[in-house]
Length: 451
Image (cartoon, rainbow, N blue to C red; front, side, top):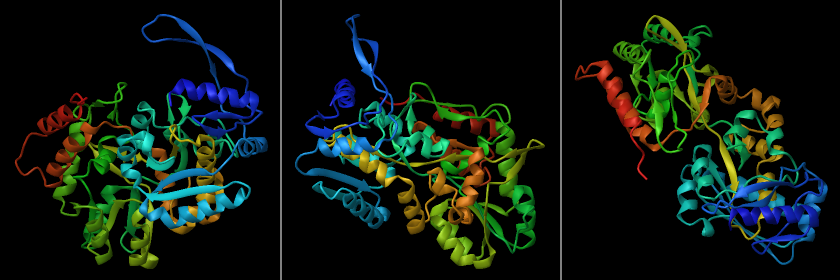
């Protein structure tokens, strides 16, 4: 369905309360803001025409009532959730259906990892799920492909007001909200053994290396993983950056300028200490933590249960430490990641898809997701509960959020940054000049993106 048709259909819904969108019964709140005519230029014609702009409505009981009244026949929807989220999502769908006993539903649940949702949706948007979970770094491509329905109406709550600002920003493209925040914990922070480090030690990587060395332990860090390496080169207090350019495809990175060489040399110094070591991957890092070889690692919430079980009373989690480069101290940064739920604009039942997406991401559902899987809520009230705040890993990623950057980076970032991290993690065995290493990495990161 073309975007223009969607906008017109939603405007008609607002005034008539009953309308169809691609044969789909839908209804928006009667309290929705008035239509504001605006002019839009038809591409290539130079002519203008009036097109209604529909602002996001306030949640109103009549919205759901209108939707139900406009519905005839069976509402058939397909939902994609990750393999790990299947049981919970099935329970939530059952709860959703129970709220509307007068409506006939046929909701099918399929498994699709949030990390590859974009690829599966864009393979054929018209055949993709009506409602699907995805990682926030995929949102630009989904929007550009016309594969995400704008959140232009609220049925039960206002997405932008109920969720933390970072998650709303992650769900927003060009000032418009296109998804429903589901979690706010897809990032990384510090796990540590309290028997090795004091509360003061964990504030500084230099102090941590000293303490770990004294205890004959190591600190594992996935230097050859570009996602984690970003935390050093885009540290708070520097003017360094790696980001997506305005064309939405190529990158802008200046790691080879300013304090970039100082940071690279600092990493080599840490590696040469024999205490700060390159971890192979998540699994080996957690394994070495459990075996006692590592006293600390940088990782995410997905490892919390295993590390907590292994360390018991010595289990600790905190924001990332500072580090020293060129005689100055910098706060490690990180990528901030969110998981979102999107609605397919090609759905036969866009209204019901939006209402289901709201339900799957409302306060109660986010609390249930935390209780079932330990995932950090994006919902403000859910995140402020005592249970969530008392969880060490969730509290740590919340503390790191102040120093985190949304993951908006082009595909050419990953391999060059990984190669740089691999060389630094191995101690620069060939002795290549650090400036040359950084120049090569930046050249690859900033290379024109393939069409």
